[in-house]
Structures are given as C-alpha cells and as structure tokens.
Image (cartoon, rainbow, N blue to C red; front, side, top):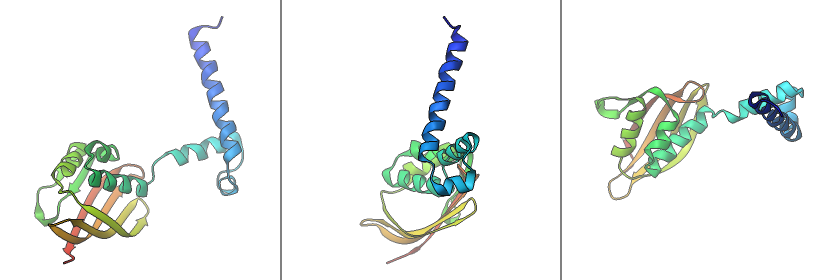
Length: 160
C-alpha cells in the first residue's frame, strides 16, 4: 500500500494527465497557433482561459448590481477597490464599499449599448432606468489588474 502522501501525489498526477488529455482533445487551431501543441502549452492555454478577463469582471459587477447581489459584485473586485460616486459624494473603498454600492443603489434596468476595452480598462455605455424615477445615459469605467476590478467610476446625464 502507498503512503498517504504518495497516494495523493499519484491521484494528483492522474488528474493533471486527464486535464492535459482533455485540453489536447479540445484545443482549437487558434489556440494551437497561439500557444503551441505541447502538453505544457496546452496547460498554459487552459490556465489562461480559466482566468476572468476585464470585460467579464465588469459585466459580472453590473449584473450583480442589477440583481442586487452584493457578494457577487465584491467577488470580482480587488481587496482595495476604489469606487468613485458621481456628484462629489464620498468614495467607497474595498470590497465592503462594493457591497455598500449594491445595497444603496435603487432597483434599475440597464441596457449596454456600447462596450470598449482598452488593455485592462473596460468602458460600458448605455441606458440605465429606474422605472418611475429616472432614465440616464450612463458611462461606467472599470479599471482592472487584468482579472479583478481595482477602480470604478460612473457618470450619467438625463435621458428624459
């Protein structure tokens, strides 16, 4: 019988080998040309695909805001995220600030009409409506570290 550490190492190796085999079986020609076809490059492409990208982080934050889900919004933010509120209101800081923004925001419906990605910065423009209250053209800017949101600003102008 194998010692517990050796048994776990064998299980881990089998799991990694299975992941490599699955990755090789599903690697597209674009991935192969970008990363190569060796087992190591296939593992690298798998790792790169599992990391959230800036656009995904921004959209997840906005979906969480609309769904009023503070934990989901905080999950895509860095520990030290800075959120600047329009109109000179105090800035919100950290994941607790992201949670607070979700809690204080009025229920709204958002329609993104334009998205722009510039490196690790994402800009989402569209219409935000709180039925019976307001309709605004909004611009949200999300700066990220490539994965998590580090800085958020938003501005609006009345649509009605």
